Image (tube, rainbow over all chains, first blue to last red):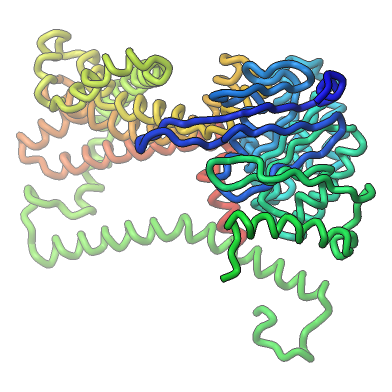
Length: 264
Length: 289
């Protein structure tokens, strides 16, 4: 890889390993994982449960330490929580005692951003994901999909260049999920976000990504990288197309080959 | 009635059905509200009737078990006495309780924040609960006399423990993802504490506060038993010594009332302080049934 190439990478990991110590001895969760995401690129980490993909995401965010290897985000070596990236977790992680708007504004309070401007931006964000009129609702008054939308708004409030998402739609029903995927695509295109998206859904990964990084079961290694060359904005009908199926079939075969899935 | 009982041809327009269902829902809600008040009253009423009938039918001696009507008479007759002594006990309970909050919550915080301190203090803390309060109460009387102070201290000593434990448990119960969230947002540790950890711990702390208020009443009475010249516990002892069982029961009634009212006040404060918590949304859940 030449110097100019690596400079263009917004998120870059080289040989990242993670060894946990457990009661039964050391466990290697990640084994020399390398990947890169160019600016504005949507990269999915796809793999079975326990392959360390969430661990990798937390390492990329600087929330977990790595045992070896290097991670650069926005051109800077990760050492502690990365300054201005946005994170969406598996669960919405909303504060029950705050309204939707105030939950989004938590980001501004934490970063001490000017309050009025943040307020306008938060309201606009909520509106853009279809939550106009729900600003003053509390989390328990919102559906699962709405809650996750609020958490996406919170992750975007400070206008980060990178967005890390850890199976954000895993707990949602299929229809809500489809809508969320469409909305996310639009948000990412509008904002030219560089996204690292962890999922175990093949469809989700192919639909959203420019590049799918497939991980093998424990210890987590990169099994294969597949570039998804489908025009954007992608529509739900695209999922029925032959090109789309070709990608999913290719990924399915890799999982069959690694024994993640078996038909016998 | 709702539509199940009607044949399809008799079903009205959806708007009409909606209005009917709305009416049914409101009636059900009103009924639920009414039964929320009525059923406990009914249960107590049945108990009192059984008690009264049992005492009369079996001719139980007055000094053993007075009938509720007799107790009611004693409450009426000795009302000034009950109020006078009840006020003393109330003061002991309130001061002891406030003291247990003032010490219990900060102590819980420090235990949570400092592991070495937690290790050092825990055995002491647990021993303080293992010691029977009736055993140290005489010592307190010896040290602090017959006044308010020893009772306040015993009420405090019994009540502060659940507050400490519930504070520690509440603070420790935060999910890892919330910690990550705060870190990823570069939230300072003081802001994280006040904006996330403390509110997160509030339901648990209130659980401890509710246990503590009933214990504070017990503590005050224990203190009065050991050495006092006033208070409901003192009144109970005197009544017992004189075989004035109706007064004894009147005193018990006053104590129960004190405990229930104090508990209810804490519950109201909880409802105001953490309206967002699921335990405070019982009515919504009931109405949506």
